[in-house]
Length: 214
Image (tube, rainbow, N blue to C red; front, side):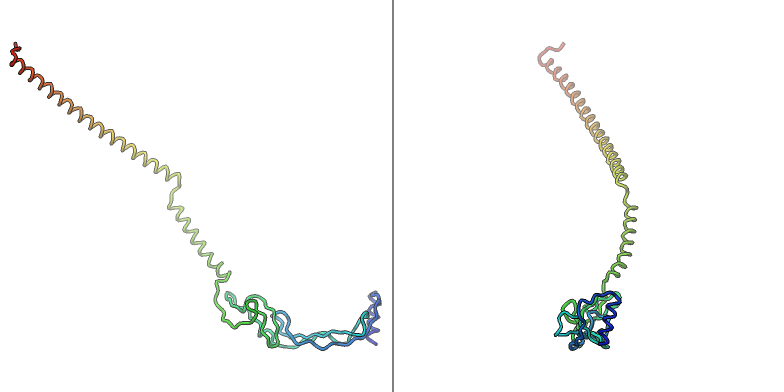
């Protein structure tokens, strides 16, 4: 009765309307001990409810607490966290567990595995590896930029070289043609000279034979 009076006084102080009656209830039996749904609380927990089956519309109250905690080793069966730069099946992220002798609910296959930690190519290590690779790529690109000339300069050099080669080939062709032409002219002149000499000798012989010479 004292608790009921105290509750009525509290309701009056905070202007809570007493539309329902306050009834003294009874606790249900405690639930089974179980761990919290995280890997960081080592204690186990059990709960009970305050009810009065004979009252449906009244406010039911009970003396005592609706929760109890007990020291336990829930974190032992939970997957441990891996060391930095390591990975494994049991040690990534958080897990939801049901303790008290049961395995924790692991994300991969639903059970806890005992596996060795392995050195990883973790994001941190990959980032550390990309830095020297990037520096080497920058140095290589700079060296290539120094060795390879500009496109305009290279094309100008090639054009000058081509024009020089074309001029030289043209001069060589002209000189060859001139030499060939001069040789042919000399040959024609020699052949004409021989032909005229031969015709004069033949005419003289005809005059002697036919008696037309003076």
